[in-house]
Length: 230
Image (tube, rainbow, N blue to C red):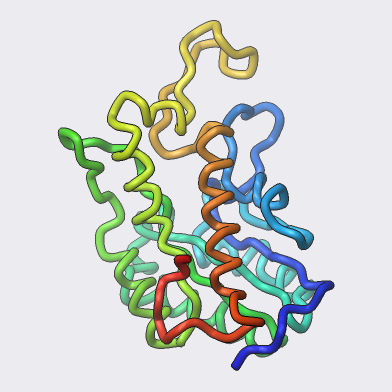
């Protein structure tokens, strides 16, 4: 049984650009972490940054993040986009080794580590979204089961989100801008990885609902390895 969530708890976010708060020069591009605070009743501390892997996060932000984690806090962890480009961070090796270390260090401080699979890229093959992360999502699912850690399956959710809207309708969730329509991207942009604020808000709302599911029943831990769904 997990302890009841402290009224002073904080959500800490570790991740890459799909989680990070973008600079004003990049708007309306946004990671979902920038909008989580609007959907939860506790402070959000977002240390995610663009281009992060599990390794570079350890090198640049992890010490800062873990130093701020207190008893009863929740650390939401989402990597994979950039790890899959680095041979040393293979799905069943360096990547999951580092995720497991993150979970262990959060638990040592009395916090709860929540693992997330990667947000899918908006790559359609006909009317279906093409899987682009190889074995990485399954590796996270298996690790969550092994460590008895809560899981938010953002690969599944974002794939469904895009397919539900369709190949054309889902464009609105990503940063697709025609030339001359936005002052920060005067030449336009067609990005199928990074979210428009509209998409980031949708994902943040799902993450928040999933976190409430994890915290349900006065803090009882969900069944071993089960996804956080209501």
